[in-house]
Length: 218
Image (tube, rainbow, N blue to C red):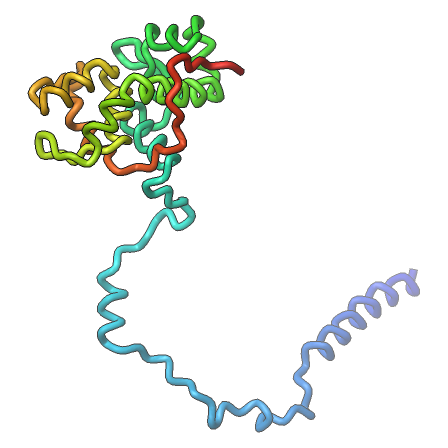
């Protein structure tokens, strides 16, 4: 019993001594070896730089990729306008998904099951490409004729034409261009052909190949 008590005292005491020795500063260290004398330690910045840093707003999304005017930028900007990028939304008029397709347009692309379409993001992305290819074929002559011109205060670009065709159909885009802005259809929420022409101007849509018979296949 006594041996056990002694053991219980000695072992913890020994551990404490070892810890103390490990943490005790080494008296042989020479503080002069760690002097900062002669080092350049002036970290002051100029007043101009300080004012710039103070005025610059803090960026919240530091890791958000900058898509710019790329085709991906075009797709995502259009999707955000249509549905805030939500694949699974249906608006009050029954338009579906990230890019807000109507059932009649989906039929033109070979999609006859809207419910399947709504819950299949891959199908939605392919439908967007196919629809753009079809619209580009329908509007190919108008793109060649009007691209670079100013109509109703808007510089006409291929991406603006394709975005407006997504909104209102290629027929209404033709009417807008050929009437030089007089025929400017708006949807039920107030977005017009002209507005889409301007908002989505200048993106790179060169990867879209005109295709009269564009269809979606998985």
